[in-house]
Amino acid sequence: MDLQLRKNIIATITYYDVFDFPLTSFEIWKHLVALPTEDGVQKFWRLDQVIKELETDEIKEYILNLQGFYLLHGRKKLVENRRKRELISIKKIKKLKKYSKYLKMVPFIVMIALTGNLSYKNGNEDSDLDVLIVCKYGHLWTGRFLMTVVTHLFGIRMWGDKHTDRVCLNYYITDKSLEVPTKDLFAAHEYSFIMPMYGMDVFKKFTEENSWIRNYKPHYQIKVLKTDLCEEDSSRAQFVRNTFESIFNFEFIENYLKKIQQKKIKSNPKTEYKGAIIEASDEYLIFLPKPHGPKVFEEYKKRLTSLELPWRV
View (cartoon, rainbow, N blue to C red):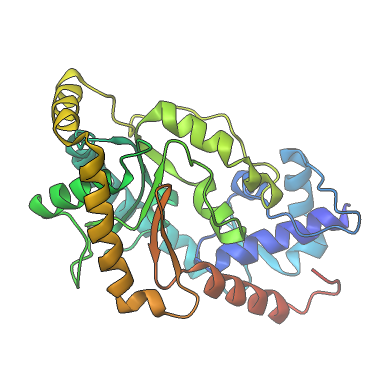
């Protein structure tokens, strides 16, 4: 058997163990984490090769197969936990779909996509609704302002201690800057599960622009299949959007909103947090005071080390 494949399988299951998320054999293949190789070249494997490797004694020493899910030994509770979280997530995703019927009317918004733990159905009762929003280039600050106003008026905006089932508006990009600025294993995980809720055409371009994900997940598929969760545009939504875009389509409005929002961002003490990811430009508006990526990666390394593998990963 291929030692590199074995390493990647164990690394993949261990990485998702940090999220308390056991994987099926297909999910292991699809989201296979590519560890560095000696020659720097990543190999691609077929699903049947992954399945065969999962049945080897070398894998079974560290990995348990329970009801079709693969997980680390001692983590049996994760299977039932995953089923419960999936039911919770489905209910929350349906709420966001309902919200999307109205959010797609917000001027200058061309795509809304679900991210975070709900995107791979791993949410809990307290989960908020993490989204990535794409605005028309040149109208990022206006789009953000109007989205904030609309979600606040509808009572679905996350702010203060109010977060359960509320929309988290901390990540905006434009249709001319679809490649996300942060490129690491956590981002590869995040955007390989991203789920379009509105703006399918833009979402297809988004997946193409972020093909760097294959550096971490070589089996990442750029081809996007439409789902019934993605809201179709409508004549009503187009009318509302076009009407308000004609009202707000002035450079001085964009510049004014940029000025006041930049001032507010700079005065926010959370921007001073160590390791914070803050982007406030005409292409990206990202506010992540406590990004999950570094913490997840450290825990992932810790769990790999605890396995006491006979080879280096």
